[in-house]
Amino acid sequence: MTETERNPWPALWALVVGFFMILVDSTIVAVANPAIMTALGSDVNQVVWVTSAYLLTYAVPLLVTGRLGDRFGPKNVYLLGLVIFTLASLWCGLSGSIAMLIAARAVQGLGAALMTPQTMAVITRTFAPDRRGAAMGLWGAVAGVATLVGPLAGGVLVDGLGWEWIFFVNVPVGVVAFALAWRLVPSLDTHTHSFDIPGVVLSAVGMFLLVFGIQEGSSQDWNLVVWLCIAAGVVVLGIFLYSQSRDVAEPLLPLRLFRDRNFSLANVAITSMGFAVTSMVLPLMFYAQAVRGLSPTGAALLMVPMAVITGICAPFVGRLVDRTHPRYIAGSGFLMFAIALGWLALVMTPDSPTWQLLIPIGLIGLGNACIWSPLAATATHDLPPHQAGAGAGVYNTTRQVGAVLGSAAMAALITARLSAQGLGGGGGSTEAGVQHLPEAIHEPFATAMSQSVMLPAAVLLVGFVASVLFARPIRAARPAAGDRAAEAGVQG
Image (cartoon, rainbow, N blue to C red; front, side, top):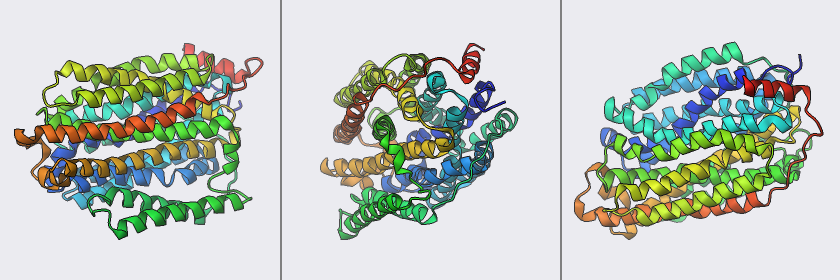
């Protein structure tokens, strides 16, 4: 039985359990930041590294972990990553200092990097091209809901059990995910690959220097060292790209994939999406708790319309992807998301009624549902099986690069806007925890947070432009055997 003749749905359902968990951890910390700051005695810049360390070690290895799945089998690499992620989650919960927590989150990100490309690779290798829309609908629903459910789950756990439990909860989930993947995910054929170790080093060093410079810029008054870090990161990444163009054997970043117009545009679009989803949560959670006086659970409940609408709509969008030009769905999604964030920024005031916040938040959910599935299906439509891991690695790398840059840029912007409002760049105003801000500074704090939300709104317009430039994918003339298996999976 070939890869596309078996029913691929049980394997996909098993994989998305772990995929959901690692994406939740990209945003679950946002609502717990005030509690972590108070418990571990950190400031804004330190606590943001709890998220950025995870995103950084998640993003950098993705280019090679996709190849590892091709070489050693996506099931084996996924299970290894799941073990690392689960054990690192336990370490996170047991951390007694901010430095220890950041270190544990970095290891957790490495586990996530091993897992993520395998999910898309399995979809690409087991679903026929013209039947991937439904599978990507599930993938998109999981991706979209997970990044929005993170703050909600974090709020409930922080209020009920303490911030440590946002990490402890991953342990039983990880055990269940391991058992499901071991039982249901097939062992797919492997392909021989060489590994570009210099490329791994160059991409890792370049990304770290760039992100570190952006994130530390405001706290260091944008001094010479900061600018040298940013410049060095850009130069090293430039050297990396040049080396990839010269490595004709098997580069870490196969630039030939970008000859496909839709693959290139989908990577630009998903980068802007990763930036926006990661960066928008932080100012919203700080505003909800510091200005509106909501508990972590109350702040997280603001995200419910977003998560519910995304979860309901994403599967329907997935079914449309196989029949509709992707530019119409994805373009509409990006435009709705950007408009909704701009709208949200306008109503983030100390005395706005809650319903005025919930309307744009709900619109964000609808926009979110229209983005994930069309982008993923369009990016992977024409990938051959032997490049499934590489393509999935590149696509997930660009998404995570966007998330890392979004986290770093938002930390810098929040610090700068707080300073502009006379609040000391976030240090003095938050050392005691933003949950207990004096009422006199609610107005300037809210202004700083609302101004910060405009950054992801602007970045989403890049995704809008990229998505409206999509070409219609070439459709197969008639269903293949794999198509019938995929259809049977949908119907079952």
